Image (cartoon, rainbow, N blue to C red; front, top):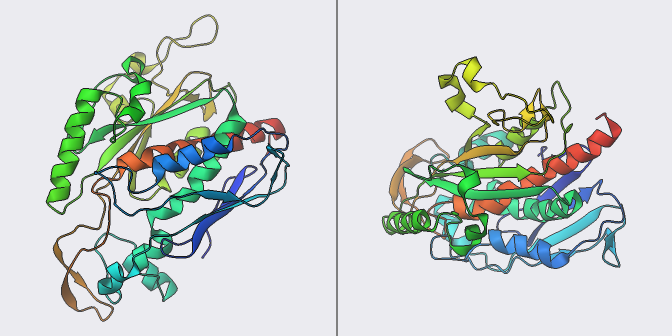
Length: 354
């Protein structure tokens, strides 16, 4: 299986399965001499880990990261950073009922057809548990980026949408509720709605908004490695993501060019920011902001019709521990992937080549 590495110069290769002994990764290209706060890395993992509230999967994993190489006396050495996160609470028997059948809208069928074999325990490599490795790498990338600030939050669950400009939100409220929505009133409504969906044995999708501030001018490598293209690739590589839009996004089609254009100030900043901080594939110094759409989790705890390996129609019932809505736990994953892209382009800008 190819496709397990992300990045050009700042590069993560991840390994592991949902029900294997461990997940982990190797980060190559991280510069030497970066002072790392290991507690901050663990904090990011804690934001992603299962079992942290009543509206996420109740799998209990400490998700403690162990770093094996690339760090000495609290600083990066410039050599590969190897790390692992051990699985401790697998319940593989929860998946025995799908050993010979496929869950609708999951990776089961295509994995089996592509490779002729699949790990049905929690989805194996296709499980969102793989993203724990990304969060570790992203936490390291964040510390490398220094003053660049990356903030993601839940802006929509189902039809419940936070219709406020991010500039009017208090980001300090994001971690004050289990949904990770910076508006406390909307967060409570979202939480109650997710709980009601969970009681039905069903799932619901949502949207995460990400804002990147203090980005220098000049990140991005046109024509095929534009900054927004790499951000899109990074976000679309996350499990359950179905859409990506940056700046004015799809709403921009409703405007005339004279309305949509960002007029310049004398210092090169712009009066508006419909470009989303990126022009011609290159950062322009304004805030970068984008939305990511997540589908409802494919595994529902209800009876459903599907097919087995012989192509016969069968009826089965969803089992196991699953998120009724993935977006609360996906917030740190979005931030991590954004950090990996920014770290990569920061190094690329110094070499001006790939």
